[in-house]
Image 1 (cartoon, rainbow, N blue to C red):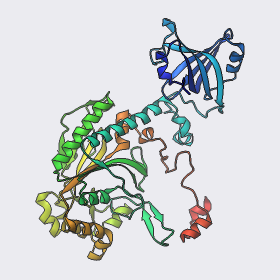
Image 2 (image 1 turned 135 degrees about the horizontal axis):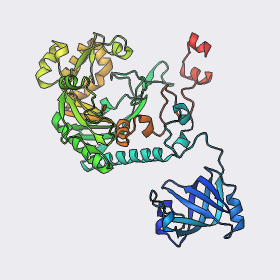
Image 3 (image 1 turned 180 degrees about the horizontal axis):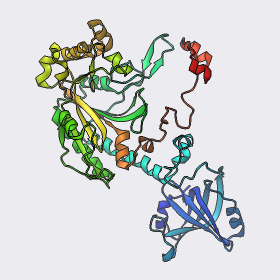
Image 4 (image 1 turned 45 degrees about the vertical axis):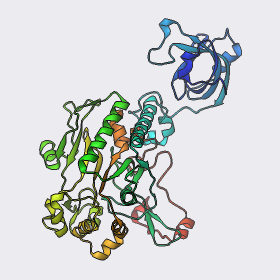
Length: 481
């Protein structure tokens, strides 16, 4: 429609006949006048129905209710100075309607969509997430997340990175969490795993010679949900060839500074970012994910810092099923089995001596008490990668079954390489001043692992189970459900 305009454009269309389409945010009856607050994706504007202008149109406006979707054609006029709203770009104007079309009626919403929504129960909000997303705070958060993603993409593109997608259906890997698995119909009894990260594929891309790769990647891990972690998350995944640890950290730091400047409204507490060893962080803060702000209640301050020199291995937590499975010897990795030991520990690593003292080239980026990124220089020598798995208790046959494809690839000329994965959800949460990642994700899972709006996980039909060759074993818990 040629004369349809966004509400934020209204102030540039004074005296013109325009069409607005959107939702009725509120209706107020003041004597004979009816005031409609009309909202679209850009803002809101007041529409005044006066029976002196059109009795039929005024009568039609009396039927309008909150959240109805309408199309209104009318003339944009200036509001009196005393009635202008300073909090809206369209507050200096209003619409004198000429026609009204109801595009969709709406039931009374289960909750108001104009407030911040914090007082509404999580399950209730997620059941009606499509309504919850109408509130201004949520729209602002989701749009800012888009702005964050776009700024990062543009920055990486400017430095000649190539965006490459990697598979979602893949093989189970050792990355510290339980895998979500998918049964194969064509190969009964076998399963794909959903990726905990693109770790192995991005290293193979370095073998392929791309040198600079990135991906806005989905990562899926079967770990207990919490405010800053869910089954699914999005990470800014990047990898570079022919780099040192400091070069990767410096590049990422400059990208973060550029992003913060682009978003605006936030202040960095330190430039350059402090670099602490793991031991220094534990001594000073008692944690490697620390909050260095003096005023921890100030969401506008961003205290970024690097943590380096982590122990490569730790003793297995016998209460953690994934650690017990991965660490057959009683030792497992602290961050990533594909990391390179620090140069001075390579001989020790190859021999498997004094395992607890070996330090890795891992580096974590923390901000305001959260880990927002983690990476390392990678093991590109097959001997080092084999030694890592040997320390964890894997014999030659098990190593070949697990990472034989990586070892084979490394035999064909592998550049030194390293990278990082930045948690986009956590980063967007911090930049938005929120306390939960759910506030910056369109359709997050609940704290109990239920999907938003759709009722998942759910049972599948007996026919689907038969086709996949799967039989379910009933438990007492199932029978009582």
